[in-house]
Image (tube, rainbow, N blue to C red):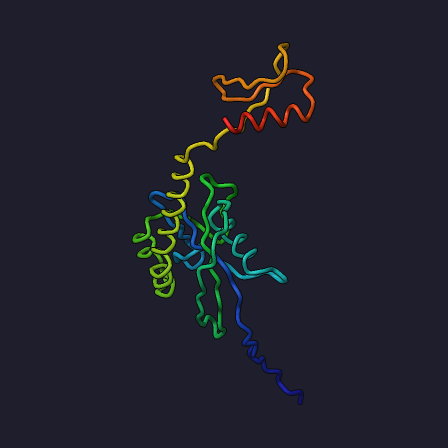
Length: 208
C-alpha cells in the first residue's frame, strides 16, 4: 500500500524585506499620503516588497509612485518598522519623500484610494497601530524639515544680488589711457591699447 503523501508547511523564516515613504505635498501646510488597500480595506502608509536584486531605496520610490500616482523626490532616511506577518518577520524601511503637485500615473490595482491629510488626521486614518506609532514619531520631524526648507528658499530669494564685475570698454579716439567714471563705474581704455597699458590703467582705476 502506497504511503499517503502529506503536505509540509514551509519552514522559510527569512525576513520579508519591504520599503516605502512618508510622503508629503506642500511645505507651508504639508499633507501626508495614506493609501487604502483594495482587498484588505485597510489604510496604510505607501510601501511594498523589494523585487529581486532591487535596492531598498529604489523599491521605496517605485512602490510610492505605484500606490500614490505621484512622482517623488527622495530625502533622508527616517527609520524602519519590524513585525511578524504570516509567521515571518518583516522589515520595512522608510524615507521622507516630497511628492509632485500633480499625479503622473494611475493607482495600481491593489490600491483603491489615496488621501492627503494633515499629520494628525493621517495618524488617525491609519489602520495598524504600529504605523500610527511610527508616523507619530517621525511626522513632526518631517514637518519641521519642510518648514526649514521653506525658510531657506525664502532667504535665498530675499538675498541681494552679487555685485557686478567692473566693465572694461574701449574708448574711440583720444590720446593715451584715461579712467572714466560713468553710471556703470566701469574702466575704459582706448582701442588698440597694449597689455602693459591696459594693466597700468587697471591698477590706477582700482586705486582711485
